[in-house]
Image 1 (tube, rainbow, N blue to C red):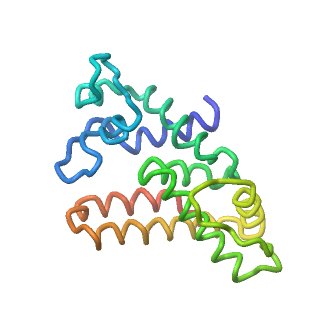
Image 2 (cartoon, rainbow, N blue to C red):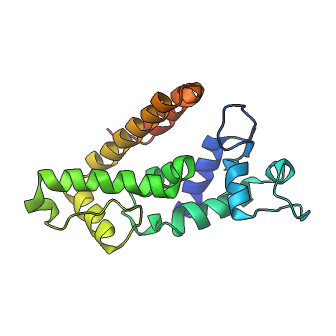
Length: 189
């Protein structure tokens, strides 16, 4: 099993199996694959022409890994980021969507760049949710200069984002402790 397979299988384990919590905005979920995502993807696993709860129940761990690789690792360009960031960013993308994860990374990179432009460069990092060459260069440069601090800074941005979700929608408080625990697993000493 290669490094990426291990990363993706770890996310599947973190997500757990079948869950149908009434406050989960994604609906019924299996191995992290939510009904909301499945409908957007057109994931009709039983071939009945409708994406519904039955399709979610059919999601296997291997299918979840395949979907994570395709839509939450490769498609958003997380595979182009420094290896140290990839586990956190892929998990963030699975949990909150690739666009949100990338925007939080870009915002973190830009704030760090503003504090040390002589080290981190003069090029402003656009917060657009797209990993392009500027984001990749900034992530590489910042990782090289700041090491684990970058991973922890993105973890902190993710925690702030999760706290804001609960502030805006208190029904999501039931998930907050689990979300925080999940993010802290990526923090580096």
